[in-house]
Amino acid sequence: MANILILFNGWSVKTIGGGEYHMLSVAARWIEESIALVIPKIGYNIATSILSSPDSVYFSSSEKKDLVSYTTLSFLYLQRILRSLFFRFKQKPDVVIASSHYLWDTLPGLVFSQRLRSKLVIYMHGLLETSPSYTRSEGIWDKIALLNDRIGLVLCRKADLIFAINN
Image 1 (cartoon, rainbow, N blue to C red):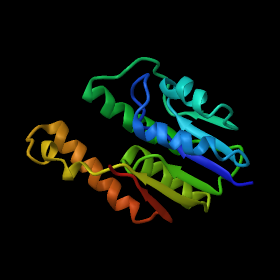
Image 2 (cartoon, rainbow, N blue to C red):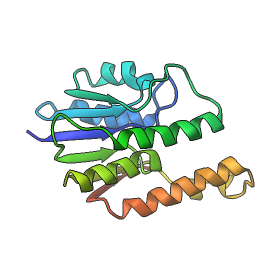
Image 3 (cartoon, rainbow, N blue to C red):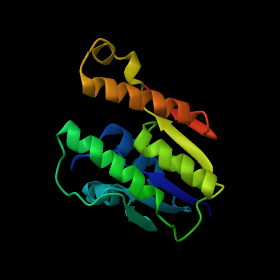
């Protein structure tokens, strides 16, 4: 039995996105494995309705309502990254899975994999810099999103395995 840690630090609404649903659906098939989640409280109910019995859950933030402000989200993602870095796990994970290639999942995933000598797997769900709406925009939040995308891609180079999910 493998010990698997899955990071979901990007969850920001009470509903579920395609990336989270895909990752949880895959994890639900790993019946023989021990699965731990790093997840904000806002995603807990939906996550446990798909993955009925994770062995451990670590909350990276405590908000329970949808977050729509880019400013609030930016600070919250930073808080989730920092808070995640201080978790101590009941069991050392054999595999750490970042549910996205964004900084809020890859940075803690990379730190955990190096600190705990675990394999790092990253799910990549598409690139913002290939989207015309992001590359043409001059807005500050679009620039921050592109920077997050690019830093995440640099961190992906340290992964043991990358799953690219695209349409």
